[in-house]
Structure formats: structure tokens, C-alpha cells
Figure (cartoon, chains in turn purple, cyan):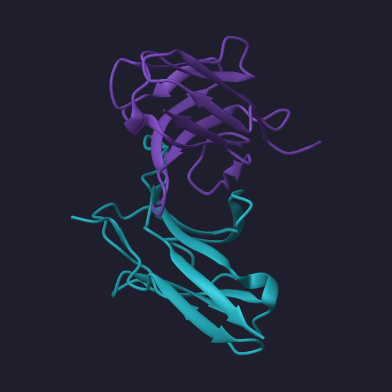
Length: 115
Length: 116
């Protein structure tokens, strides 16, 4: 498909485990964003990539969260030592260049549940 | 302080009526963009409409229009001739700056339910 894809769509894990969430952006989009959406709230920004580099990671809540985009396309959000408070929908978005006017196109999200 | 405020947690509207969803924002940056997204129960964020701070005219996209009142810092979404498929969460979001600030700042959303 032509849109942003995310896998897995759902992930259930136990407290303390490590998880990886994958995002495949729209082909050719250099900008990639991760957001977290808790139940009943709007999304919160986590991190932004321009190409392979993290241009802004100011939204990552702590050092348990890390994200990579080694080849400037697919990105992986990694969460170590998961906590129940990490349960949320993790949304990935991409845009062509990352400029202000650009629409960010979102994937369907990964629903993470930490038991 | 909240940067994006959506004061209507929920709204019920009769099918075929027009509906206005409120959004006020707070920024000191003269350059910013305002976005509206729709999130159906499936969870995917769907872009609806964009308004730039320097745009002279209010944005329109099909049945969606944005009532942009810069002095009041409001950017209300108007949906004309509502349809059952419009039932969803609606989020207002803002992006500040000319290029150094990449994140979207989001409101809490409004849940819109269209009644048949």
C-alpha cells in the first residue's frame, strides 16, 4: 500500500520486558515522527527524524525510550523495561520534507498494553 | 498553559446539519500552522484541513472549512451537511516556527456523534 504502515498492530507485554515497534513511512518521505496517544487524549510528540538522524527527540519521556532510522526509511521505536504507564497507542507519521506547511500522514498505530 | 484548547469534549449533531468544532491556540510565534485531523474508531489519524498563519483566506476542503480568526487565536472547524460517517474524534493541532520546530501540538479532541 501507499500509506504509512505500522507493525505490530497490537502488542501485549509484561512489565519489565523490552518491545520494538516498527514504522514504514510513505516511500520518499524524509521526515518521520513518532507520537504517543493515551486513552482519551490527543497525541504527544516523541521524536522526529529527518533522514537517518533524530532532529528532535525532546519528547522522549526517559532513557528507556529510543528510536532509530538507520537507512532513512523504516524506523523502530524501542522501549526497555516497560512499565504499565507505557500502555498507549504509538502513532507514526511521515511527511515529504518536514516543513511547517506539510501534512503529516499517519499510520494506524500500534496499541501497546503492558500488564 | 495549554497551547491548544478544544472546549467541547463531545457533541451530538443531527445528520445533514452543519457543525462547528472549536479550537483556540496560544503561541507567540508569528509563523505557525494549524491542522485538523479526524480519528475514527479504527484509530488512524486522517488529515482534514490546514491553515497557515500568513494565509489571507480561510481554508476550505470540500465540506470542511476553517473559520480562522487570528486576533482571537481561534481556528474552528466547520463541517457542512454532516453525514453519519463524520462520527469520530476530531483533533486540532498546531506547528510553530519556520522550520526548527517539527512537532505537532495537539488538543484533547472533540468526540462528534452524528444522529440519524
